[in-house]
Amino acid sequence: MLTNALSKVPLKYHNGLRNGLLWAAFFAFAFGLLSYGAFTEENKTITKETGHLFWKKTTETTIHHDLSERIPYLIEAIVLILVAVVCLVIALRLTQLSGKYKNYFAIIKGNDKLLIQQIADINNSNPRQVMNDLQNMIDSNYINGYYIDYKQGLLVDKNYIPEKFVRKIVKCQTCGASNEVVIGQSNYCQYCDSLIIL
Image (cartoon, rainbow, N blue to C red; front, side, top):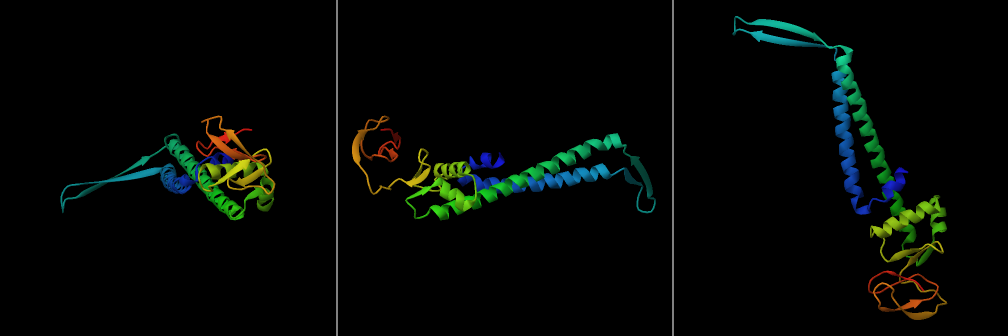
């Protein structure tokens, strides 16, 4: 579930988000430790000095803090440390996701069309997740010039033309422009980039 949610974050925000999460984890952990330190402090000694150089008088007062006064510090410490752990886990998942995207890019590079199942087999992952990841990469402009043919389960280069093809001129339903399309392939309007349905 977390990976699915993170895969919706555009790639250009991954580094900034990861760095922000790491800083948030650091500060949450530091303040959590401070709160825990306040919880463990049962007695507090206050030293007060009065008088001058030779006539100084030192008074020490010890204040005892009951457990009921210290419990809020413990709760605060637990919450802050949990926030730090969650931030670290999310940052780790973002790092893994970026690595997965780089792996996809290496597989895709130089291919005109690939079966989604093939990519999933290479990465030993779920084809549905691979399709979502690839669509996110396309939407984030991490890979340009590709689209997913959901009907055939293919990742296809927009410039790919099959060996056996039939061309036809059709009007775009969105903008009305005439486009030369290849039958049996997903086609996009040259002018408005919308999908042309035959």
